[in-house]
Length: 338
Ligand SMILES: Nc1ncnc2c1ncn2[C@@H]1O[C@H](COP(=O)(O)OP(=O)(O)OP(=O)(O)O)[C@@H](O)[C@H]1O
Ligand SMILES: [Mg+2]
Image (tube, rainbow, N blue to C red; front, side):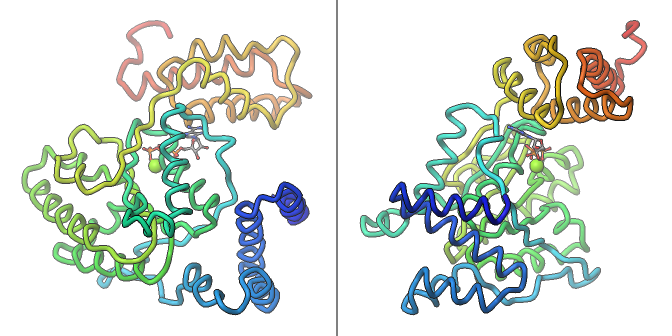
């Protein structure tokens, strides 16, 4: 979003008397100024928005000067701080899933009110479902919408270090998290699933997971902690219990696949006879990420062939290429003439 679009949004929130949206957009603007190292401007704006009284709490919320924790042995960073500018418009998920995510956001925004009733907002959420259905994407959107940076942690990166170091790595990550307010994503949590056939490894992983769960139980601070997996079926009950909510991502139905084709083909002009419904019919079982890949392939095909608009043929070629690729992946190539 450009600066002038942000300012337009700010004006709109004002004229709609929508204080919540006004604050969100204003925060976005301030965070942007900070990223550009316009610190004096950011500070002034922050003062104007919150007054001096609340400035320290607002800063506490968004600031953390601790160095990024690193793996002791190999020195690689254990997490990444990421910033996004995304919204729910391009996330095609079922109504139920969307409502669940919105509920998480609303509870977080109203956490003070909930607290007066001794209730806590949903803090630890498990995102699960097939690959490429929007789990990581959702974390990025939540980070944008709530205007809190995303702390991205690849669970397997923490584990792949030397034995015995894992617990230390996890501790460092949690220490960091507790010193700020973030959307935290433990991504690729499925390491727990991948190693289940290897008994020795599995025992080790189990210890790591238990360790993780203990830290998760005791985590302090006001962050929202997400863990994403596509092996939810083998997670043991101890894990399920630890999460305040479990959000499940379905593969898209035909109508959703149609919407995905529409969204992802938006950047290019189309021939008049383009039949999106046909493509959504023949892509049953594919994920949103698969459809994104197909549309990108089709657009590139049109562009490098100097077409002024995309044709049915371009998309057909991309779909067939993708289906063939899937057959190779599943060792089915050569079983028919496709
Ligand atoms: N539901 C969706 N609606 C629209 N686009 C989507 C959706 N899901 C995925 N995408 C697109 O595909 C990309 C990859 O998806 P994402 O990384 O969120 O998948 P994932 O569920 O985290 O998969 P994995 O389990 O493999 O990590 C996204 O950045 C987005 O562009
Ligand atoms: Mg992911």
